[in-house]
Each structure stands twice: as structure tokens, then as C-alpha cells.
Image (cartoon, rainbow, N blue to C red; front, side, top):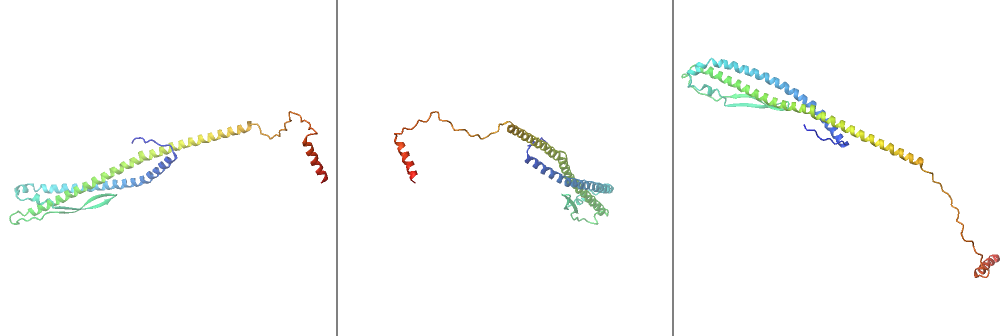
Length: 245
């Protein structure tokens, strides 16, 4: 699996945490299904072996009729022993639909009881029984194939979760947390440095005080007023009115 580029951000941290929680929640279910399928595969394999053994026993019985069948080649016993219909049903095993043998139907046959030897009935019955057992073996092989295919998929998913997805999510979370921790440490350091600079600036700056500036003295002396100027008369009149009041 190619390495995916990890964004070292807080939203990505939440996304990977949620993904890790999902993976850890699904993994036990997958493992349980894997165990169920493994048990079913063992059971089906055992049934198939027993069915094959039963088929081989019937093959041994049929081999005893080889000479008789060669002498009566005109009687189509092998053809009459072929199934006309195989009826199956579907069942669900750990989420896998598999076929189950219900019945093997053979075509009806008509032959003269007087023109054929008496062993024909027994040979035909044995041939059909061998066909039934062979069909049962084929159905069990199909069950084994379907269950084994699903088991392979589940094992691949379990390995993907255990060896790829979960470790990658944990590694991403670790790297993001380290990066966010570094950023927080840097921010705290910058804040402390700014605080120290402000404290030093306040400590070294001179205090500001309010002083009252004296009035500036006139550079030129005041000249005395002329007694004959009209302004003097106005002042005397105003002072005289105040005395009368």
C-alpha cells in the first residue's frame, strides 16, 4: 500500500481517530466471521471426504458388473442412470449462500422384464445410487469452493486491518500529536518572550510628569499712556460713574 501523505492538522487528527475507532470496532466482527468460516470449511471438507469414500465404495460395487454390462451393451443402463433433474436449495452460512442437495430425479425407463436378465434392476439401482453419491460430492465441492473463497476474502480484510490500516492510523495520530505539541510549545515560548520584552520596555522607559510652564515675559517694556489721549478720558469717566453708584 503506498504511503499516503499525512496532513499535520487538528481536523486530520480527528479524522484518523474516528477511522481508528471504526477499524477497531469492525475487526472483532471480521475475526468472528473468519472463525465461523474456518469451522464450516473443516466440516464441509469432512463431509466431502465421507461422500467420496461412499462413492468409491459404490464404484467398487459397479466394477463387479463390468462383464455383465459388456455382454448387454444394447441395454442403455448408463444412460438411464443419468439424472434428469437435480433439485437444490440455498442456505446461508456465516453470510455465504451455498447450495444444498435436496433430490436427484431420474427419467422413467421402460423395458421388458422377459427380454432382459433379472440382474438389470439391481444394476440400474446401483448405477443410480452411484450417480446420487457423485452429485452429493459435487455439491459438497461447490460448498467448499464458495466458503473457501469467502474465507480468503475475510482473511485478506483481517490482514489489511491488522497490518496496514490500524498501524497507519496509529502512526498518523502519533505524528500529528507530536506536530501539534511542537506548535503549542513554540506558541508558549513566543508568548513568554513577548511578555519579557514588554516587561523590560516598561522597566527602562522614563516616567512622564506634568509640569506647569511659567508665562513668558514680554520682551518689550510697556510704554506709559499719554494723558492727552482720548482713552484716558474714557477711563476717568468710567471710574467717575462707579464712584457715583
